[in-house]
Image (cartoon, rainbow over the protein chains, first blue to last red):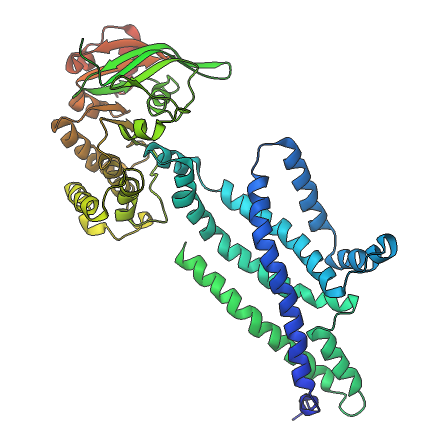
Length: 224
Length: 246
């Protein structure tokens, strides 16, 4: 059988380093996801406002996030802000800022969509039963919104985890960067490591994202 | 003078420039089954929505048991409990079981004890033939079954008057009957109701009073529904009723 180059994992602490890198990626995404969900819900509720100003501002925000490649945002925040404003933001904080900036916009849009997708008759039939506005939200609107939201936001979470691979471009040593380092260091002794190491990286991403994705489709079915 | 259960005085309702109801007056007494008919856009549904304060009104007054009901008043919840409403589309709460749909408002709004309300809920669900579906979700029920649950959900609040807004308009013909039979048995038991419907045979069978509306005004009113449906007095009503014949 062809040498897959898996031997490099048994040299020194290579495999542990790779897991460390994975943890960096997961940590950045977890923090960003938490921020995105909390602020995103607030932004989403705001987006349903009838105010023209809020509508325009949120539209511009959303479009910027959609159009701008995440990597450009990373460069602006990490390199750009240091030059222009003399801010010394660490790479990891920069990454969290960019990912949250992205996540809040997308999450906000999901929340907005879920909120407006609840038919007006649901509000009315609740009101007609004498329920106060707060009770209508608490017992009728929010539970339905959350059910619609969870599969969609889980999808956003997996996309965020995958996109963290970009942060190596601003010098964060996450799983993909560690993988490259291992391959570089062993280029002469085990050239095939370039396959084995990346395959393992693939597997690690898969092991993290797959259960999340399964959870999404499970919830989608249960609450259909 | 005796207090009417529902009294509407000079009600004006408009959407912007579009006037729906013009200085509308009506008195409904206990035990009345008022059927409201008329062409689309005549304001009949809007009338019901105003009585339940789902619409802002531009003038006039709606009194239930002598007390005004208004969207922005503090006592709106108490007032709305006196008025039960069932809508055209199946408006059950999709995330709750049939039983929870029925129990929610009595427990949360009227603060009644769960076991006491549950007993009544099962009794009422039994009357509409759905007690065995109590743990199902609305999506598992047919349109007619959902509509019967919606009636139970309104009844359990013990409203003084029940408003039915085209409750069979979205149903298959076979399901229409099962829903209307429930309504007829309610009428027999003395419930006060206002019914907007396009089912003329049903209207004829159940009404104690008929209102024929056009352009937000009562064109013809009759306390002899049988006579009205056989020989309406106004030309407009004649023409309207004729449109149901083939």
